[in-house]
Amino acid sequence: MAKHIFVTGGVASSLGKGLAASSLGRLLKSRGLRVTIQKLDPYINVDPGTLNPFEHGEVFVTDDGGETDLDLGHYERFIDESLHRDSNATTGSIYQAVIARERRGDFLGRTVQVIPHITDEIKHRIRRLATDDTDVVITEIGGTVGDIEILPFLEAVRQLRKDVGRDNVVFVHVTLVPYLGPSGEQKTKPTQHSVTELRSRGIIPDLIVCRSDRSISDGLKQKISNLCDVPVEAVVSCVDAPNLYEIPLALHEEGLDDYVCRLLHFDDDAHPLDLSAWEGLVERIEASTRPVRLGLIGKYVNLPDAYLSVVEALRHGGYHHGADVTVEWIQAEEVEGLLAEGRLRDLDGIVLPGGFGERGIEGKVAAAGYAREHAVPCLGLCLGLQVMVIDYARNVAGLEGANSREFDASSPHLVIDLMDDQRDVVDKGGTMRLGACLARLQPGSQVAAAYGTEVVSERHRHRFEVNPRYRARLADAGLACSGVSPDDRLVEFIELPGHPFWVGTQAHPEFKSRPDRAHPLFRELVGAALARAEGRAPRLLAVDHLERTRPVA
Ligand code: GLN
Image (tube, rainbow, N blue to C red):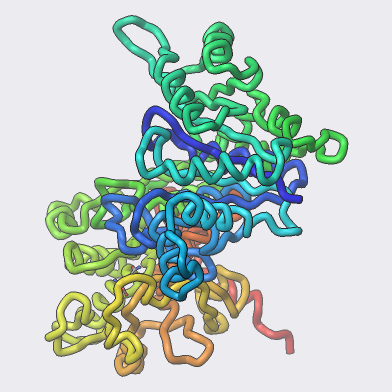
């Protein structure tokens, strides 16, 4: 039977609960345990798909088209498993399910209430992940203990411990131990208060993970142990790490996984820890010092979390080449001014990430054009591909005023348009092209060379597509549609033959990148940018590829 670990947070939001959960997942997986992770979010949106990235950061898309919380990105990158839409549940989705059953008459005659109906549904969401092929389900509860919205979740997991047996459940509470400069002290009071709050809901934490900007002394751990009624070995210090991927190693040093395994009766002989691969990764990260600067041209650059997976994928590309990627955050609306002043000249590469809405579009088109004309490596993701096509249409194919219907429906050349099945969509939730789609890559193309294969699957999240009516015009002007949907209806990848790397994809490959397995497109982007940074001649991917794959007569 699968065991459960619940991760709650106290004192403040954004404590890095997600990273603590992910790191614990990594440690357990490194013992050969089969781990899955999920997030329960106490807000009323049915999923984060309709949330503004400024408010909530990136929407992470799963293979099955779930629009989920960005913590799922951390989970996937740390435990290296593809998660699914069921790996994220919100208060909104839970109420929606209960209300749908009420309307169907499932509760006929009874009053539908938070307890037991909502709490039962929460328990159902948790237990459905505890399948026969899972040893451990880690459930992170979003929000902070003490919030009104979190109460049904706490009540549900309190009950669940009784339902599945005490030996099968561990409660991990992540808190903040702030350092007060003037008194030169680290303070435990906020931790005590949040543990008291948790206990008032009937949950006694088994472990307390203390987030802090400096390490926590044994004396302080003893104090937390006494005041919060946990053994001292259950107080784990988690200091800000220079690199996210070091956190599992730091938590292991603190004894986190040993203690959790003891509580859950996973014995060391049956599940010995092998962290060598992860240690190798961290060593590689530490040795990644070759400088390379990539400009990320976005609309939400004031909130870097809006591009979390893109930035991680760039870093992964860096680790592959031993490069230390510096991301320059560039506000799309400022690009034209920066270009005029020559201030983008020292970028070694450009990323055009996904996005919605008109603001900043002309800046992104200008950045795509600048990269194209100056042989600057450039990767366009979803909206990024669309602006590359707009640039090419206007400035090379002679289609004056070309645009996307999303930004200017009256454009004479709608090179990016809605497909027929999207025209009448009114519901804004979950109605885009979502999740994994296959693409066929053109043999001998740069993208086929990068992937090393000619059929690929990537995750999507968009409404608009390259307008099929313009494909021939664009191709005649030299733009290669180097990847298409299996039925040839949709353009999935574009590239510019002869350019070191000017590649766009209609998908979001950033979601599938892993720290020890950089996504091919990010790997090649960073490789090309590094060549530029180091003054080496670009290696034309597709030419190499043609040489390598030319059939022997
Ligand atoms: N706004 C564009 C579309 O809906 C691109 C979306 C994206 O970049 N994820 O097609």
